[in-house]
Amino acid sequence: MYCPNCNSEVLTEVKTVSETYPVKGEEITITAKVRCCKNCGQDIWDEELDEQNLLDAFAIYRQRHGLLQADEIRRIREKYGLSQVAFAKVLGLGDKTIARYENGSIADMAQNNLIELMKQPSNFRELLQKNRDKISKQDYENAMNNLETLRVKVTFSYTTDSNMVYNLRPNSPNSPEFWGDRYYA
Image 1 (tube, rainbow, N blue to C red):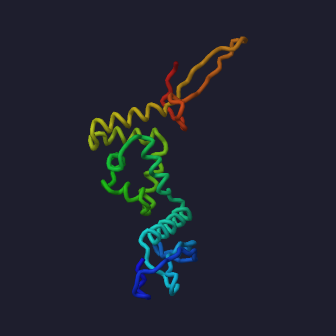
Image 2 (cartoon, rainbow, N blue to C red):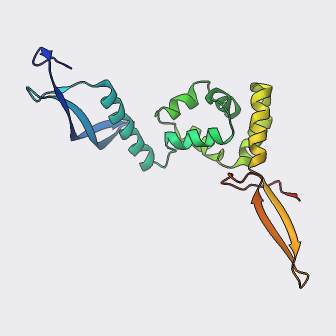
Image 3 (cartoon, rainbow, N blue to C red):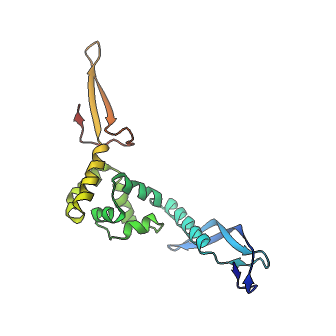
């Protein structure tokens, strides 16, 4: 890499240092990775490392303030099988909003709370039905199919002493969550 201090191409190494970043008016200290010149020891700007350091500071800020992490937002969206744009439209957000949050930007508390409510399929279904005209028919059908796999299936059987036993299981064996709107098998 080029070292501006040595004014030449040099060998570099990555060191771990403590750095403090201002995030929304708050000082966040992280263990950062910094590229250094092996000749003079000066820091050399490395876009990839600097971007990751900033994302690490944002993650700590979100954790301190109880905000969803980028990967949590992605998992919520993917649970319903929607693109970032379609998910944003269902929530009434701008087209690029979810993409920014999934790439590490920090959501404000109101938008964070809205996305967090979407963890519950019944909440998502309500907004999906309300905003179905804002997304394609294919996206709507895809989301409804994904919602169907999250439903609880209730089966029942009788024991030898005539007691009824209820069994709850998801429609899909891979479904991690249960929600309302039961139906009986």
